[in-house]
Image (cartoon, rainbow over all chains, first blue to last red; front, side):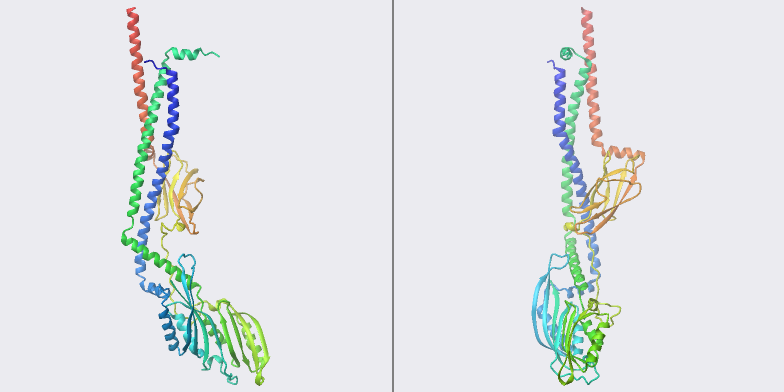
Length: 189
Length: 342
């Protein structure tokens, strides 16, 4: 069979063009994309591997600081532990020479912490205690030295007794009892 | 227009027509061959990606995942603790301040501290107006007092002076200062723990995953995520003063200088990747020029696929050309035999 050369050449070149545009080029593009994808996957694998190596290292570093971590755990406990808190206020007040007359939970609500999705609970207690200035100072100092973070947000007191202004002592040095109203804030998860 | 040439092409046989024809045929075969090679290569790469994904799933033993949970838990807790502690204020300082600043002949009946507004409201009695004025002046002189906002005084019972005043305190009075405050409580300050960004927490990701030079052949860099270094091995003779980059980074992150920008790499170049959360990571890109031999070796390594295609193309052309020459000689001989017979 005699082949018509010019027509055959034209047809072949046309088919080649079609093959290049519709088969070879898309496959080449896929090839390049896969090459990049593979590079990314390899980098991801390396990053993940390094990440876990770093995590293990940090874990052991944390284990070496278990005392500090226990303090953090105490400062920000997982549960509010309201029973323990009431006992703590009662005990600290009595150790400082004060009497707790009233104590009630005025607020327990989550507050969003900076850069964190999980919220922290804010617990506010209102306490009415009876004692002198020196006892109040001790009570406040005990709260601030505590492992758990306490913040006194409001303090007020009133005195109905007549002052002894003739005395040269400062009011803060006289052993007279007052009713102190305190608002104490603490946090938990 | 003379169309005879077209008829001549159809009727007559030209040797160069055969050459073009066989070349076209060989090109056609090479195109199909290319397609097949890319198909095979893509399939191999897909398989490799699949293996890489499977390998990725195996990274991190159950124990390491437990460590991760524990470390991330503590990271959050320490950060929260630091946040609370930094904003923690000490109300007891106000009482210390009041003890020091109150004059002996002043008696407070009412006292109220509003820590949020750093304001103290007081009312009481003094034995004279002079005592009240000295007390107010004492507050005003003090650095811890911003200002006295209200002041009322009146003559009360038994010739005593009733007064009330509001004092706005300086916020620094509530701040914990360990060096100067001897009465301050003992507190433990723990620095926040900085842990590497979890691949899951996308906002913190700031990785360079791919770093390429858009050369021919393309040069793919080796990214070291520990030392944050990118090593590029370029062929011998590459102009390092004008190299165009192709950089792929973590989703959502940005990089400076940007990908695609032409840079001078004669000295190490620093790239800064900024994550979504604003944290940054610096990478240094170092370029090594390969020796002449290695360069050609690298070239063939990177372009093995194209070299293979080229060789096959040449072989096909050679085979077809030999066939064409052999057939032409055969025809010439046949014609000679015919003419001799005639």
